[in-house]
Length: 78
Image (cartoon, rainbow, N blue to C red; front, side):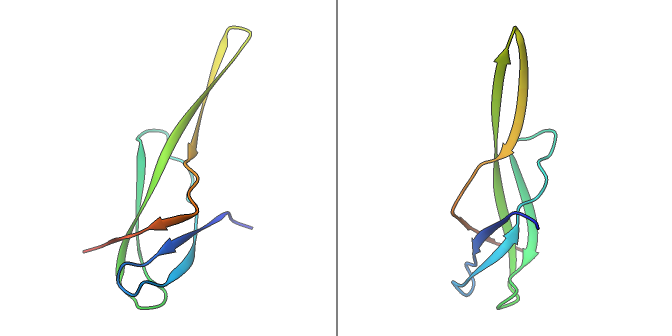
């Protein structure tokens, strides 16, 4: 089962579940283009990427994660 987040549509003000995408290797944010399943409006869903660096025995390991958010406010798409 995929991890889901809640997205708020700026067109109709309804919320819907959206799958959390895989984290890209580079960049501080990820923008996904989609449409609202309720009203059909075009949306841009912006995910922020956070970095965690763990150091153990002199070796650092970097992990990139989607920043957790309870509800993501989508933007109107073109």
